[in-house]
Amino acid sequence: MSKQSKDSLTNVPKNEIWINNLEYFNHSNFENMDINEVASLILDTYKTYNGRQFLNEDDLNFLLPSDKLEIERSTLSHVLLRHRWNGNFCSPIKERLNTSGTTMLDVGCGPGLWAIDMGLNHPSSSIIAIDIDPSKFPPNDQCPPNVCFLTCNAVHGIPFPPNTFDFVNISLMWSAFSEAQWILLIKDLIRVLKYDGWIEFTEPDPALRNGGKNLTWLLESFANACRDVGGVNIRIYEKIPTYIRAMDELEDLNCMSVNYPVGEWYGCFGKYSLDNLERLLKAAVYLPKYIGISNEQFNNLLKDYLKEANETKSFIYIYKYFAKKVSKKAPII
Ligand SMILES: C[S@@+](CC[C@H](N)C(=O)[O-])C[C@H]1O[C@@H](n2cnc3c(N)ncnc32)[C@H](O)[C@@H]1O
Image (tube, rainbow, N blue to C red; front, side, top):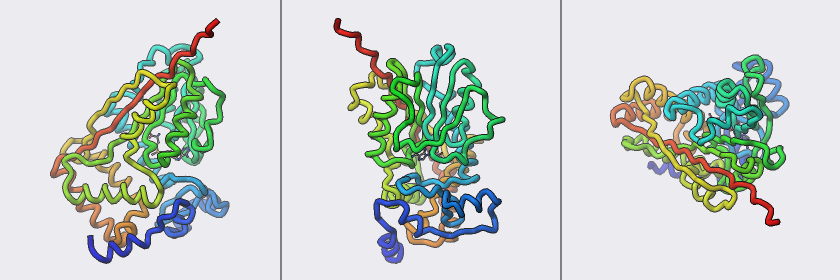
């Protein structure tokens, strides 16, 4: 890395509080916004940085934008994930989901595609989907009647009584929580899970396999920027099984992985997964400054580096972990 980029690294705020970092990237661009976006900026719900809109919450670690482009990326990402896993879940709970009165919770639902899919496929169950950002929720007329959306910051506690849900799903939340928050959140999710209910996690190992030198370096810089700017460990996939094993209330832990090709070498899927990666790296508006280059230099470099994925036949792994809440202990007498 050049001297210039090393120096600029030291300029990146390393404080724990994301709100201070927000000032660092503040560039408003009102001309390209509709009236709702402008209103939410005036009300301070959102702030813009490098042309992207972010939620303006004091204790939020989440590093991805809250805007239309991110909704599009998240939608693409869900479709790719569902295709690669051949479905929306792996927990052995299919029969139960078709039983009347079954309840499910989706944590950090984004545009809600998982919840909608599950609602349509299991009409006798009820699904609650929560997210901190209601602007991502789909319009009511696009939701089946058994799905509902709730605005909630998951790290402030899941607002349901103990033993409420038969199935809890949490997927692609690698950029949302610190390690300490993950541990507290998992405990709270176990609390709201029914005895014998299942909880399922889906998270990527972001290390590129068969990666070219440049794209590998860029993804490592992205991981480091998430750690330094947002206090987030995007390799949380490797910690989750340890957390689960340490919690007495869960048993029957299953670990599965699929490879997830990135690049046109893998046809249509690879083309779209590369598109998803490009959108993700562009959404990381703090990255150019972190590695010490201008936005324009970053965009040019990104175009070149992404080509490597096609040449080297790159892929990543995506992991699923699912486990069951232990049965309720029978009274001794
Ligand atoms: C990358 S998206 C994942 C969406 C979806 N789960 C999926 O698998 O496609 C992460 C979502 O988590 C939400 N999120 C981030 N921090 C959160 C928090 N503290 N509480 C609730 N939702 C949060 C974001 O608004 C975003 O919609």
